[in-house]
Length: 239
Image (cartoon, rainbow, N blue to C red; front, side, top):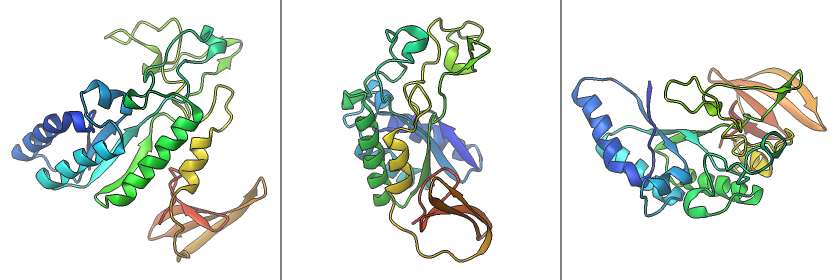
């Protein structure tokens, strides 16, 4: 079982340590410490290093003091300072601003951040992985009207009042405002080291845009092989 705390950065090490220690003290059983890592919020929390190196300090503290592996349940970086311009004229900033100490919200900046994150995870075997939030929350219209979707479009404490300017994370996705994949998505898929040749049962094969795909079941886990590389269902390459 994973228990997810909304903090997962250097600025909130003490808060997380206390929270998870109290769970253990009260007999709560869990397998993995979950945390959220956003450069924007790390800066807001007073981290002296809002980059992945700072996040590694948080993960090391969880390993030392809580004795559990870590899963980054949310990771996010804005590729544009503003939300969908077609929807709001381009004048409304997104939730994550200029990504804290990075002070940059560009497609190239998002890709570099993902690369830095992967390099950091390669250094720490105690971190079992991460999930990007939210990769697909692109603004869409239905019957000529913009869709209002769950929490990202509501701002009141009761969740009943809507932002007039729409989706606060439409500029944090892995796709642009038209749904075109951003370079960070390809970095997600190709920045890991090649895996060994798989063993297991082949389920099926199919082709998409000149790339050969194969579904593989290995040790009970469904994996995807693309052009000789192996990925899990979150798009992370398996070493």
